[in-house]
Length: 282
Image (cartoon, rainbow, N blue to C red):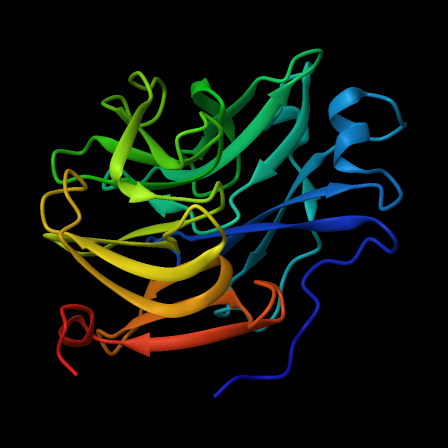
């Protein structure tokens, strides 16, 4: 069951979105990162610098499991460089590392170029202050991140390399620097957002439209920290796009995703399933 919708942040005619939540285990606080821009300004105008206004970064908090939220506060100066034009947090979940560091996957474009980079921002003090982490290679975009068993990070990225494969990079310093970008040949994509989470100590889950077009919303499972993805099951065979995975309190898997019959954007659906279903049991 679901409550009625509630407005978390409202800036009138301005666009505000790209939600990226993370929970601080120490306090239970939900920190929700967002981006904002003037509603009359297009993405292309922001990238080209042809209109007044740009993307700014905001943060709101909830200390009661999302029942109420603090007024959004701007953190742009801490997490966006002056020559970055387009900027997006998430969309999708952040993570907290075993060290306590909060990590939010983001992306940006550098002024005067067509260079698009995935990057992370992080906080070591429960979300009070934020800093810019490392950027991955060019032609990467919306991303998702997990901490691996050896404490390294895996960044899984929407790719503009023209190969219809997800891009990946790794960090051994908690996101300050990233390895060279590689293509994951097992993760086909139409150039779209995707979701990646740790389900358990030895299982990662990934969801995206697993096709060269935005269709075939599929969930995949890895037992070797993202090196291979031998288990997969299609959730929706038709048009589909963005998605978000979560492990539920029951131990089942939750999946929020866009889908439709003629367009991926006709409805938002929520599905739940368990590992047995994912691994082929009826």
